[in-house]
Image (cartoon, rainbow, N blue to C red; front, side):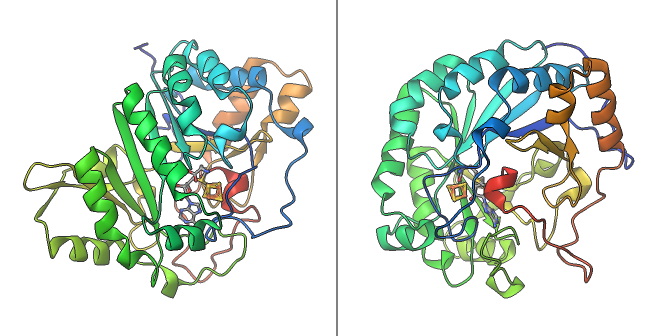
Length: 333
Ligand code: SAM
Ligand code: SF4
């Protein structure tokens, strides 16, 4: 681990150590909470940052104290030769941890290459274990491919695999205990994420969110849970151990109890726009700086300025909340 003093501290005193990089806005799924069913206007490929451009940004931010990277999308495994990018980023001085969030459809074939390239941790999105419910929410009939991807990841030796399930009222209730039982049996931490207003169809309403406390109550009907102290200081999830020692779960209460005070992350879209919040109204165009020949020092200074005015928090619960113009797949979740 390289010893660097943090140089990315925002106006609220939060130190930024985490960059989430979207490598594509394309996806082979059409999850109802994220993408429209059809007619998606994707970015032109010439607008995507190349691997070399992504490495350049990572090299710059690593010198500002960022040591954790997460690759996301769209579906990151749709980007050609993702292991090649991971290898390049693993070699950047100061990067200690590279993780990826994926729908796992292509994971079976790529798990070994991803591990060999230096990917450390995996979050797999899986909302339902009932095949019909899976098809309803993901608009694709391929639960088995996702389960095969999870199996492959475990078999090749990934040590940290989490399952992310979006918590939607009148949908997720039947899946909570199924996912929990699978997680306990197979060694995956299951994390429920409250449905956020980032769906392309714009059908989000507060009434459609299944809240974290309701999920906890449901699990406690069967299992004793012990809250893990300070989990919010490490990541966005409030985590709980099962009292019987068999695994843990996480709840991301992005709507009912946002973790903004502890937020230590920034994001970069596949077309090279820096976003200091998932719900940012403004973006900083890093691609333009790179392609116009700016120096590393100028890019670093621009990132520092953007971080300085990072949003104190999102406004989902306030009257003046405005949805971002990009849907989740085009931001990078
Ligand atoms: N395609 C990959 C996947 O699904 O894992 C990576 C990108 S996806 C946008 C990243 C994460 O965002 C997924 O875990 C997904 O469930 C979550 N997500 C998408 N839309 C969401 C929403 N409206 N509210 C909460 N989480 C959402
Ligand atoms: Fe694709 Fe992930 Fe969005 Fe689902 S959540 S449509 S898998 S980008």
